Length: 92
View (cartoon, helix red, strand yellow):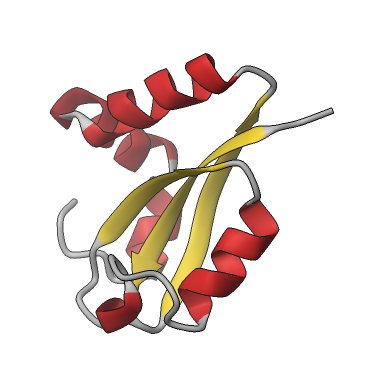
């Protein structure tokens, strides 16, 4: 069975969140952490702080778009608020 993932990375360098979609969470996270992803290679070190798994790609893509929207990002921040406080996230 194939799963689709939406995950959130936290950059310790710039204290920002990065919301991403992937079909292979383990490999993609490894690539992020080792600077092999152009979008985040200058943001190291990174932490995986949240992920969601879906059986349907369309559902995962919709969730990614929602979390990247203003309302979705605010809902995400509410859901993981304590974690963000612990990380000194600056956009609460």
